Length: 77
Image 1: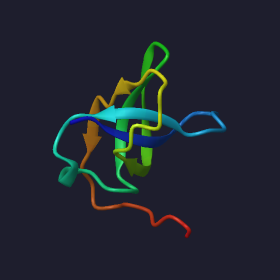
Image 2: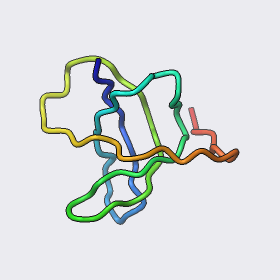
Image 3: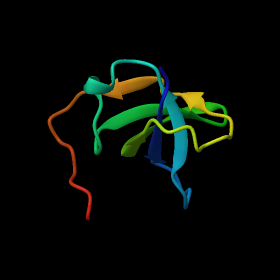
């Protein structure tokens, strides 16, 4: 199963990007840092939301890595 994940990359991009995650959904959560491909390089980013719906129809790249650390910022509600 592919989980669509909205990520805010650590770049001057003003919109979040959608990526695919094929691992165990229990291993990721909102606020977690990940490594994602943007153009021809890998950049860190933060997970903004997890969405398994099929409403998104564009192309998606896969998350390359997950950064396991104790710090995860809380998102404003």
